[in-house]
Image 1 (cartoon, rainbow, N blue to C red):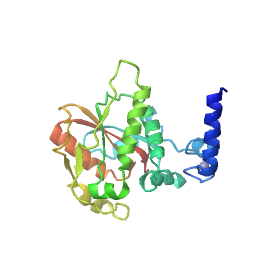
Image 2: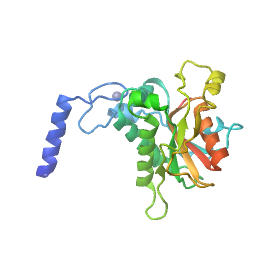
Image 3: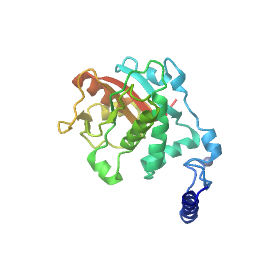
Image 4: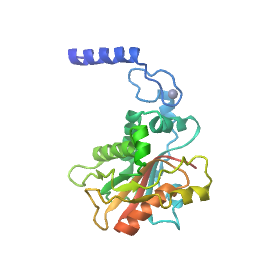
Length: 246
Ligand SMILES: [Zn+2]
């Protein structure tokens, strides 16, 4: 270990002492080399392994609803692992969103039959909600996915996708989704989005767009976004979410 590495390690140890980092799942203090999860919780992360499948259960959610090509999800939204999503969505844990987004992005490129992705479009928050929260969690995840894809794409053979955080716009300030049933969720979101005329980039017809969000539950929000991109821009759409509800 050289002097610089030693100083960096001392600095990090001192930082951990002043601001203890804890596991996003079980809450135990993290060791020096652990990132966001303790070793046990990281080892038990309920990965979907969708990237090993020709066709995934998450893709069946959209059958007969919207022409979605592939659906990518990193882990099952289960037990205490829900807390990780809550830390990103409500707790301001942006580094965790980038970290898990990157893990997902690395796997997106491993899916069988996955076509080149040209753009990543996060599900938008209403501007009022974004102002209140300070950030859009889907946009953080999109940036993580982009980084993960950049790192895993073979050099010079593929173009890394561009994140377009303002291509879609949420028109109405929809109330929280959690307490609504399937039908009222759909009615609530089906007309909530539009193409933002102020967006600087408009993907050309035939572009492949990856729409991303934190969790895939009924798919109503993602379907509403995907439908607009397919019907109004003539784009092809795939979906990526950190978590998937079985
Ligand atoms: Zn833990």
